[in-house]
Amino acid sequence: MPADKREREKSTLLASLIMASTLAAASGAVPAQLLLPAVGLFLVLTGATVGMYGIVAGHRRGSSNQVLLDVAGILVLFGFAAAIMSDKTEALMVLSELAGAVGAAAEAA
Image 1 (spheres, rainbow, N blue to C red):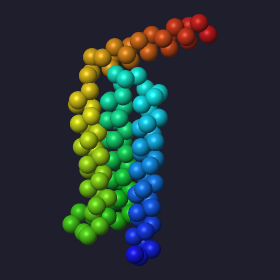
Image 2 (image 1 turned 180 degrees about the vertical axis):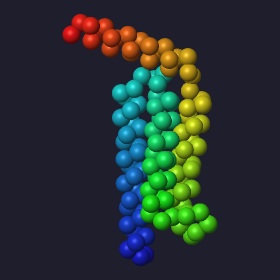
Image 3 (image 1 turned 90 degrees about the vertical axis):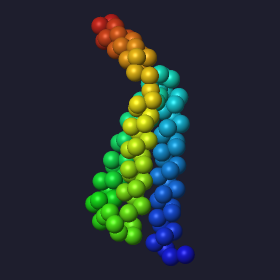
Image 4 (image 1 turned 180 degrees about the horizontal axis):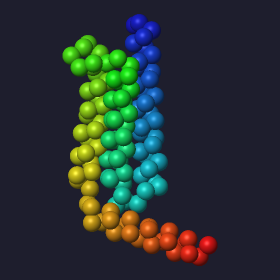
């Protein structure tokens, strides 16, 4: 196996582990009603970052190494799907409760 391919596999594995650990940490830190919108936002931002990296690194559509751009597109698609499937009314209620709690804490301080 060429060294370049091994390095790509290592970086892909590392990126997957970072993404999984971030999502696992977010599931404990974010209220349940905000988890799906937070995951959607995370996936869209990750897809945009991967896509920008792919373009800067020289990956182009139609070339043999366009896999990175395909992965970026899939991440953005899944992010939008997660945001669409979330319950907006519950998320807005939780956000208003959090804003009220932060405002009360700011007044008390």
